[in-house]
Image 1 (cartoon, rainbow, N blue to C red):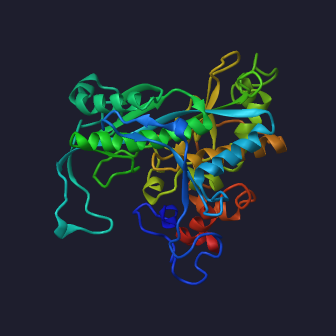
Image 2: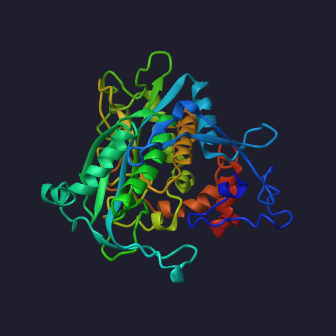
Amino acid sequence: MVSTLMLKDTADRTAYAVFEPGALDELPGFGMANNLMLLPDPASLCALPWAPGTGWMRAQPWFADGTPVPIDPRRALQHALKRLAEHGYGLRCGLEVEFHVYKIEHAGLDPATAAWPGEPPAVSMIHPGYKLLDEGWADLADEPLRIVEHTALGLGLPLKSLEIELGPSQVEAVFDASDALTAADQMVRFRNGVKQALRRAGYHASFMCRPPFANVMASGWHLHQSLVRLDDGANVFCRGAPAPGGTAADARQVLSDAGAHWLAGLLAHARGAAVFCTPTISGFSRFRPNALAPMAALWGRDNRGAMLRVLGGPGDAATRIENRIGEPMANPYLYIAAQVHAGLDGLARGLEPRRHRILPRTPRPLLACPAAWARHSMRCRPMPACSRLSVRRWWPACSA
């Protein structure tokens, strides 16, 4: 594999001047578009339901001398989960993914219009929107929805529901919880599979947060998470009874002590970690008032206006925290790794979450997160070097 494939931006351009002396001094082993070795995992082989006789295998990059590539995002998550396992915990994640599906009217493959990036296809909507969960719109969009369902189940993904979202041509897929590494792998498999299967049938799936159309509704990727004990699989966030003396605004009315510390860690590192949850300019355009997207680092109980939504209650084995900040274009390995490092810091320091507020207001919005990440005390240790370089390169305020 050409090493520049790990150094791309979202337009598939190489983000570094790889032939310039010193350009990759901070990334040892990279330079001059050298080769990397891919080591496949035979156990990951799966047949593609839309392409007979074709399969996928997951592979991870290694240098030619047999050393692992440290900026591999999957390896970053593996490192985070190893830290978590040292405390006797694992992480389970459930995916709630919004995206857009359009019918292709013109593919835009005229060589005279070739560019980098190329012109998008001309499309029409599969439903007009503004009727959440509407059965009429679901019937109208039945063909592409069936393709998404068949693709997800054919890839062995734990699809729970597929439904009409609020925005025009917008849908949502919800997946049952899996261990964190499997969930990240599933997100990669889902995005790639759905795009290919729909394209063969004349549809275009977009996981871009805000496609460039008037009145479009932004898509989010909500990450449900809970800690489990490795020895018995029990949900660490679940508590037997509400903590005495508290009110409904106290986290320990729902979460265990460990759950409250984890919640506080996510809040403490919210602005810094947000660049891994929402890494694109399009994703940042989602943060606006009254858009069901979090504008502030706050938590709430079943409150869709807060960044962190606490679900469940005493005795409920499904008690969990839903982080609503993510976008569907996020790298799943870095998104989840950022949650692990933030939550672990909350556990290690015994952080306490503030009482939740009814309205999600704060004088310092999440939009300040790139500069916050640059100042962040945890930024340089847990996350890979490529992430630090990219933040400095694409968010100039971070270099100040």
